[in-house]
Length: 215
Image (tube, rainbow, N blue to C red; front, side, top):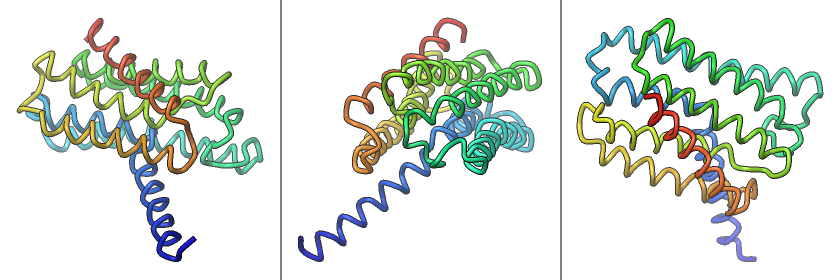
């Protein structure tokens, strides 16, 4: 293999890892709430209030699960923090499910957010539940489920006319990121094409279902 091919391969893997990190499923609730608060009629809320809501959601759905995974790794319950082994994903999935439900409850009871926004987080919880069940037999992509949930949020904001402006370009960016993320997961050999597609279908359908039925 030529030196240039090796260098290109390393660059490609590095970019794939970067995309996977920046588009981690633990960050998707925060990205979704960011879009909801800044790209819908909720942008009329005070900036300080919106930032506070965003930070609370970040703490519940990202910081707490990361701490939980780090704790499992410290006590040798899991070998790899990246949860490459399908069998090590169950308890992180269960904890993430609890966190997503807690975030939805926070938005509903404390923030009194509109139901479509609450149902985005509830849809995320349903996505995690489906992923956990499927994970018992097959390693479905949680990364793609999370990213597709963002696409579903943007789509349903448009359908339900809650957007503050035309979200076409936001949707184009989100769909493009889906393609980039799916490619990254395959390049890193974390998932097959089928697992990537299944994850995307899971995330989009779960979020859309709850936002359409209860939002």
